[in-house]
Image (cartoon, rainbow, N blue to C red; front, side, top):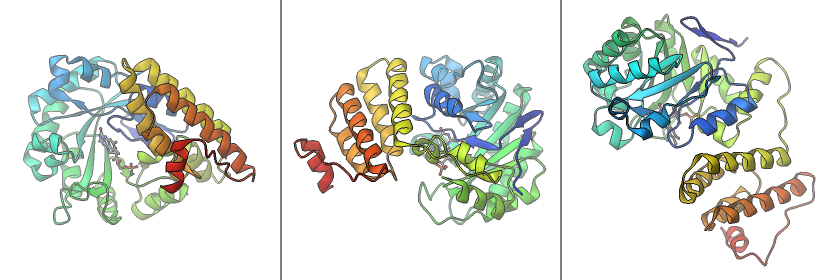
Length: 350
Ligand SMILES: Cc1cc2nc3c(=O)[nH]c(=O)nc-3n(C[C@H](O)[C@H](O)[C@H](O)COP(=O)(O)O)c2cc1C
């Protein structure tokens, strides 16, 4: 009933569940975590500024890094200068990446101000020039990720996607939101369905997929070849396995509080190993903990505790304590409060 795979040229993406690129989240460490858990058929790096990559900026090289066994992987680049994009794409190809992906979706002011990201949807001529230059520079498969349009009156993704296909792009991912929607807006996947109908190349649907039901809805409403999950995978890194299981008609795995604790603390350790400063590590841990605890019982207790944590040790202690209590709660023991802890009192009144 649901497709199980698609091809980007000769690269088989199976399962057809893709981890979205997310700047400041899906770095090498997070992608390792998701790949260890399993269930995703393709990972994508955070977006990498083409100008920086071309200059050899260490930060950009770091963002474009992937593990030798991370296969298939797409490295995503953004920018407005066709020559810089072409050079960056060549660097991506030379690094051994399987796929180069162009970002036409980023809504950030910083990126749009330079006509990159979703600003390209408003400037299809420049978008075409970029795709053409990149296509001519590399022989590996090329894909594009875009939003449905720039704003409600310009939802032109089917046209831009068609142009990309005619210029040699080999798969398209579409996030149903427009640039103007940022991260809100009312779900409208009609343009994804229209693009899928018109295009010969695979189309991947994206936006608010957090479980099997939302994935199934995207497949059903649009006929897409695959789905991409972003924030839902930070909240629940098991989401790909669970969606895949339910797509095959199996029961989804249940993840216990103990397993969540083990994975989150293990992940914190990889963040500490990867970051140079404690400040940087703590910042990233806070960000991940924020997503991870959304929807968990009393998750705000841990989010508040993180906000008040001055050191990594303190944050780790709060995390351990939270999951100990979650384990008790999950077995019907209620939520144990610790009134001697001032942070808990703040959380309880939050
Ligand atoms: C923190 C964050 C960073 C993001 N960074 C990128 C990026 O680098 N490149 C990109 O194409 N999209 C980026 N996105 C957009 C996501 O890839 C995705 O399209 C969007 O979050 C919608 O999917 P979701 O509802 O499953 O999260 C980012 C989103 C978030 C929340």
